[in-house]
Length: 146
Image (cartoon, rainbow, N blue to C red; front, side, top):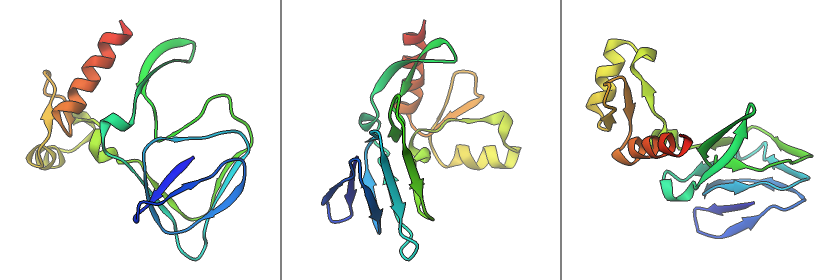
């Protein structure tokens, strides 16, 4: 797993137990078998994932027996065993950069405040996206799934 700290240095955590301290920025973290990451009890570690869409490639996979296309999540691995993430630290998935919001999940006041913050709304006017790129990404995935 690659984790970059604020100074830009890289730390690799592979099949070992490693204590994480401080604030780190990262793209996708590819997990491998037998990893145990321990967040320091003294300095609550924070891993800030990138808000850049280029850092999260599309992948085809099967979920619930059905094929789908999705973005690779910030923490990713397949068919893994012996994975542990422990301690009081925080993984910030940068959802503000990509997460759509449904109008039906908000009050009128919240929806108006969200619209005033920027972003774009889909053709139905029911789903807000933080950027045109996020909206286009959803359309690309829908086309790939057909």
